[in-house]
Amino acid sequence: MTRPDYLVSVSLQLLGSRFRVASHVRRRLLLIVADALLIPLAVWLSFWLRLAEPFSPMLQRSLWMVPAALLMGLPLYALTGQYKGLTRYVGSPALYRLAGRNGLLVLLLSQLGVLLQLPLPPRSSWVLLWLLLTGLTGVWRFALRDLLIELQASLRPAAIPVAIYGAGRAGAQLATALRQAGRYKIVAFIDDDPNLGHRTIHGIRIQPFAWLGIHSGSVQQVLLAIPSLSRARRKQILAALQPLDLHVFQVPSVEEITSGRARIDTLRPIEIEELLGRDSVPPEPHLLGPGIAGRRICVTGAGGSIGSELCRQILRWSPSKLLLLEASEPSLYAIEQELRHQFSGFVEILPLLGNVADRSWLEYVLRKHDVDLIFHAAAYKHVPLVEANPLAGLANNILATRSLCQAAHKSGVDRVSLISTDKAVRPTNVMGASKRVAELVLQAWAQQDSNTCFAMVRFGNVLGSSGSVVPLFRRQIGSGGPITITHPEIVRYFMTIPEAAQLVLQAAQLAEGGDMFLLDMGEPVRIQELATQMVRLSGLSLRDVQHPDGDIEIVYTGLRTGEKLYEELLIDAESQPTAHPLIYRARERSMSPEILWPMLDALEDALTAQHLIDALDLLKELVPEWQQSPLACADAP
Image 1 (cartoon, helix red, strand yellow):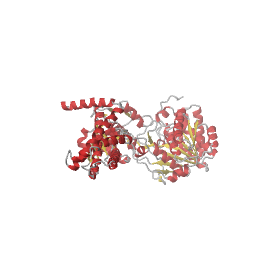
Image 2: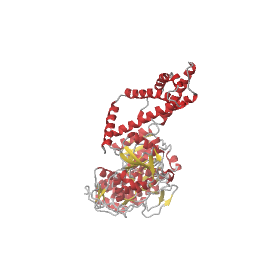
Image 3: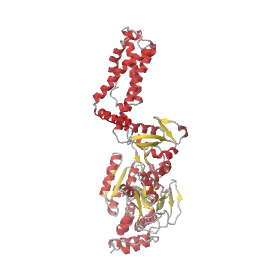
Image 4: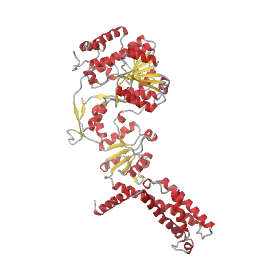
């Protein structure tokens, strides 16, 4: 920095410090004094410009206008609120109000001259006086606003150079907000619309995307200012920005802005969930409204990731009653408080603390509340934990499901929908095998019960659920790494929790009995690429052999017990389309009740006696495709 620049910077900082401590009274006094000087100046200039003489005889005869303008103008400004606004937020509305006040002042001044028969200037001078008053007082306020912004910026750390992606209305509003905040220096707007080339917003040039590739060194961050940006387009933009190693933030969505939950300048990083998920498919109204509205619905596992989202979406369609069944007291309390806060007074919400495996209690609950529809989301789903505690996993995932179906049958429940998993397909772990047996239970009940409609919905990983890889990677990145991945080639399908829950609700209305519904999971994702993308979205870099100075390292730990490289959704059937483009129906191999029930009785005996080997042998008979892996569990006898 040169010496003159340094002196200017120091002077601005000193002036800013003095101005910040000035009282509101002093600031308003400054504005009043300025107006008291500008009003006489405007009167004098109106005569000079009209008569082409700085001190004409007519000016001398009309000097009464100067004190009259002051005596009328300053009180008029004060009474109409001119000194109440914050100068640093002055904008075009303030200028329009100022023009109206000055128009009123000129009108009052002219009427005073007529009433008192005082010397009056030519009529065109009144127009000049109005224009001059508005121009001088307006320019003064805008200049003071800009000075205050510069003073505030001089008292903060160096501004971050950014480029705003999107030269539309949101981009312009964001630029205004950022300029007032003073934390950012807007280098350029980025927009590939050819009609915007060589144009400016607030004096800042609109550049094509290629400009970023050439000038990326002059920009630290890119701010996406397109609230209505689709997920697919966002992914394209992020893919193009990734080689530039720029930290990307985005403005809130249109819904967040219009609802008042966020402002245009509430910038936030792009979450990986927004890139992995798809653009949402609108729900089919005939598959949601009639099946939920006015019905009495029960959700088991209501405090879990899927269960809680099912509850949120069910309540939007106005059931008459919603039962929250949960074994975890903290989880039940959390979801009950949330739902009562959002839907208080609209629907009867009943929190029920208990275990689905308690058949007599469950039957009592279903009868008492005359439940129409059950979504069974309660399960142990964490593969390593169930692998280490197989007896508990089998009891909760299989016997509790049988208990639920028996209670639903005796209580006259209309429909039961089981939330299943892709890990039930040719399972390699106890959790997946137990969920496959749970599917067999519903298929068997569908064969012998004509009153209750039993169906299953099978899908893969959901983003953000407890135990999901995304929260794990986020924690590992936050702690400085390393990111742990079991295998470089491991692949998974991902779906957002809201989308999965919405499709589950719609699939329930398509059921005819014994149906296996599959959800379209989109494109598979390599976990290694997922981790890399999350590191870049965090504004960090990968550390590897080629980049030893990077921030986060990826470490491969080897496949865990029972873990697959790839997941599937079908065992031996073919899927068929349904009325919804993302829901498919399959009829898979089942087991007759006459064979299944005795085997489940034997399994229950083995679990009661804590005979692990017998339980696993029965599990192998029930699910012959299960690829059993060695178990290192503490509860083996």
